[in-house]
Image 1: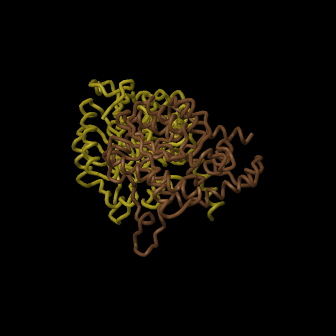
Image 2: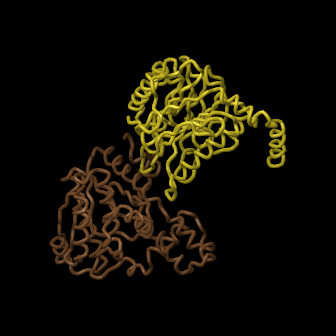
Image 3: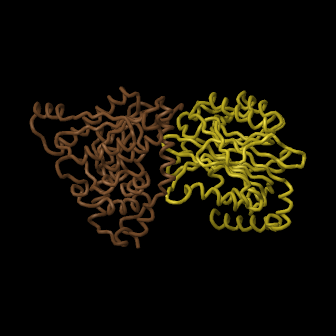
Length: 301
Length: 279
């Protein structure tokens, strides 16, 4: 595990009582289709983040399995209540945890899921709603789609919403999260790089645009954690980032390299930004709902 | 206008591409349990770029460049290959293939230029795979995107490899990469050739230049332009159709052999696993 020295790496100062929160972004390269080895990798990252007093560690999408798992999906599926997640929660101790997994439901549906655990238990599981099935993607073949965008209350991070990769490319997901009044939006991603004509990969540029835009529009902290490494020629580009509610990038992990990168942010920023630009306050949610209902009537009834 | 647009789509950031491709080579070779690569080096731009990338990714001592001249191979082929080997300090071995090729055709009788060229390409493949076993390495592929799309290569010959770092780069993009990597100028400036027979050039044989065909292909394949849109933009119908036909007609070369389906799960159809399964 290497971490680039020119980026802010976890330092032993930790949560210093000023209310600042430290998020560790675990930009890993999971082994494709080996939950056991990935579990070990997660435990190492959790241990490193814990030693540095992180308040939250975020892993990428499908962090326990790798991305291009295809027909392995049923073989790699676990339950959020199962021993693997239990082991991670115990290792995390007081630290909150976001981890990506294949979830098998009691009805034997398989979801691309990410869970939030804290205080010794899983408090939310997000099932990826938008399963990309175009270009190089084939997710609907293997996964059932989630049907909800729900926020949830956490002990230290306020109200939080989780999106998984393609969810983040849908304005409606961000809109719902704004209506949910989230303080922090977490995106667990497995984004393969495409477009090599510019200074950065095109996909990396798009993600940065979305993260900054959503932070500003929601008045929320946005944390995107993307993996690195290759699978069947796909290059996952990393570049995990934490963005403040004013759209400022607090810290960005290196492109292409594995890293455990920490972002420290001040929850008071939320208040300040919402005073300066109270976009979420001024949203006319009922108007939006009315208009969407009108469109529903016109289009579907 | 469309030419400029096509050119802009063909532009690459060579630093970024080099970084990604070197990581790709390291990762793919190491995850298979190897540290080394074997490259069939012809002194052309494709195999030179791959040799440069492998040397950079793995260290020159972990790269074996194999030159495999046939009796009609040109002096330029030998000289330019040697320049790459000398500049990089990679390991090398020269394995002439004249004896075995000539022995075969002495046995079966004379054949067309095309059969000879394909036989040479497949002979070189067997040498590379044998050398990869001897050198405990994987064969790095040297087919570029232009050739793969046009089917301008020999199936199970020069198209065969374990990992191909340049298969998603058009020939004109490889030029940009080669310039950035400081591939010898003589290689950059010479006409692309498979050295298939004396005086053979790719562009002479194909009847169009890579610069022309790459512009059509990047619009047609990558940007999903329709035929009518290409014609409206000024590309000749005959040329567009010829290229589209070559892409379609040669698709079989880019796929596994077709398997007659009988069971519930058949290789490559509904038995779907990543090649990098478990690594």
